[in-house]
Length: 125
Image (cartoon, rainbow, N blue to C red; front, side, top):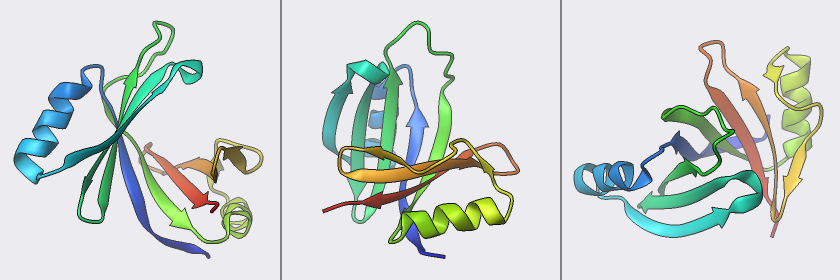
């Protein structure tokens, strides 16, 4: 398997500024970047503290049925295709039939036995 480490933890929040304030106040996280993604009906806030990253996702569309809380945990891969095949072979509940690509990354999602999503992501330079 090519998974190396946790990349980020993603949290859904209808009121992201309250969540951001919580992680800033109690854990010392700082806002690294804010991204509007209108085609996916969300705003994304990246917070960092040392090498740790939180991704706070604010849904912006009424049709989204998202609830606040943990969305997913993401792990970095250095060979996304190898990991995707490994997950398939081991019977993981995959959300995609193939590796997805977006801008400078490739990724796929699986669902753990306890229900949370797990993302495996590889960044392209």
